[in-house]
Length: 269
Image (cartoon, rainbow, N blue to C red):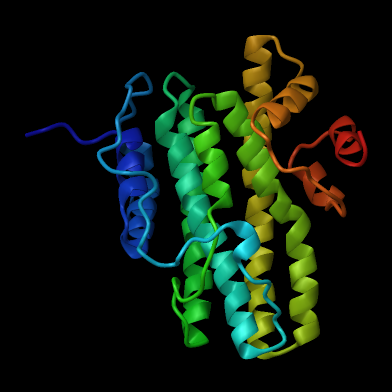
């Protein structure tokens, strides 16, 4: 009888899965099994398929070619919800990639990212089900691949990954979510207001996810004797990360562990 696959192997298998439902089920099962599952933090793993696993639809376009979405019509609301659903699907893959790709980290690192994957899978399920209630499925609208592009750019540098995915790209969600919620409240329909409630859950959890990225970025910089703020500037230039523009959700960012110095940098440094 073969030994059970360890959590990093299972994370990679879930990442490779093309079927969203199977991916979500695999992530939830892995999180439930985590307390007793084996971990080989030293193993160098190799994907058995192209990454990430995803369905044939949605069609992926360059970001500038994806139309803007307004929640003030039923079709516009569905398109907006689909865009957020796609972000959460990508977020599952990003967390799974962090959990398998980088060997040699403390066990808590892998547990942290598998918890993030589990919560992102829950977010995806909430949004997918709401989208279905509007007569649409995930894949019905075009989307873009910006989040995964940065994942590829940082695949060989764990410090860059922590700096530029959770605490840069995903932290943008902390800033954008209240603005989206304001538009949904203005639309005022029951379907729009249900989306506001779902986004409340997502925003609460995303603060924790960004905090995990901040924590491990700080830990990695300390291990390497790097100044976290100065090195962040280097990584932004090296990997051509998008420039972040205000308004910023300063309260949420502080909850997620951004310092006053870091917020000052964002606001005009």
